[in-house]
Length: 438
Image 1 (tube, rainbow, N blue to C red):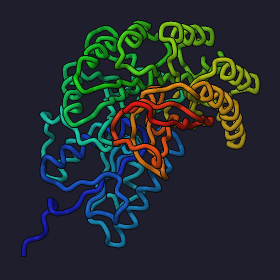
Image 2 (image 1 turned 120 degrees about the vertical axis):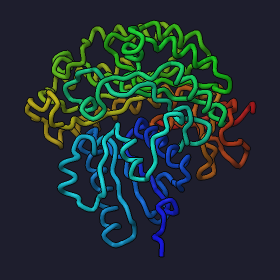
Image 3 (image 1 turned 90 degrees about the vertical axis):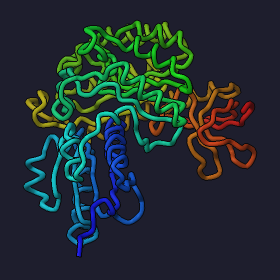
Image 4 (image 1 turned 120 degrees about the horizontal axis):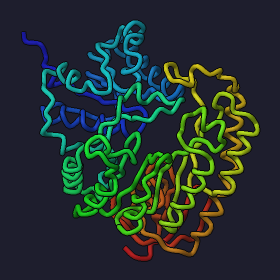
């Protein structure tokens, strides 16, 4: 009797980590589906016959989540509940040999750039002609667009270049083709992502080409919002701001991770920028694009961070009043240059400083939100939950920022549509409103 073909098996792809990993998973799913495999992403149902885990290896907490997930599925394989278990992504790229020695249940490990080798396990070849197409796993009205891979920066705390390699830009024509395809499927918002947006084009065009890319993306019919994530502050190309100001499709929103404000810490971090340059950049951004929402992240507990260093960062956050702020605790990553420094800030102190910084940000967020009460905004609605239609203004990115809640009892909104909403109430992290134009 013939054995059952793997093509009859259900494949589950489990994605951990950031939106860049999510795009990788979506491309993998596209390749599998075009070869007639049945694939589901992050399902809540019982395990499938074949599991592919796309891992994150960015910081200790993310690495632990990846390892725990692998071990969970390894146990299911031991129990005979799944047939094959494959691991790919950043953790696999960085620690493949160690993982192979420690977790024997995994059938094979693949790095971040080894999708063709992974597909070989399913007896299929990577189809480059599918690059313009993608099975998105986000709600159908928004999608991430990864414009480059890797990073040429040398931040001392960051292991991304070890996992993702050097910066490689995608050609503008390819990105336009991808965006047109996404628009044809109903996507209205694209979120540009990369390890470093502002470096885009230097390898291909010998110049920073993000402004040109943005101009071209704005020409794509069907796309109404274009959002920018992960812009590096050092040598920030100010001409990007002119395009943002002049092009109505580009959201007045910028995610620009600053990491710190104390000069001694910035120097040890190898961020290639000073506190005064940082302040000048923030002022230039707000001057050129009035009303822009700025999101940043700060890193607490870097080796040698003194109370004075931390206080300097806190005062900067208080004075600058970022619209959105996230905080990471330093993770001592082997093979980074900061690993040579003594990790001399205790876990307890890192947690305390992270909490303190968020306590500073909360009233800032609340005050900024309170200023929106009585005003109306264009809102894109993502989902319905707990008696509310839940959406976002142009000042908010999915999952990490504010949401706009509209009571379903007195409003009807089709998910994936825009509506004009008047804000009637606000908290530190949410806005409440009523639809006035749909």
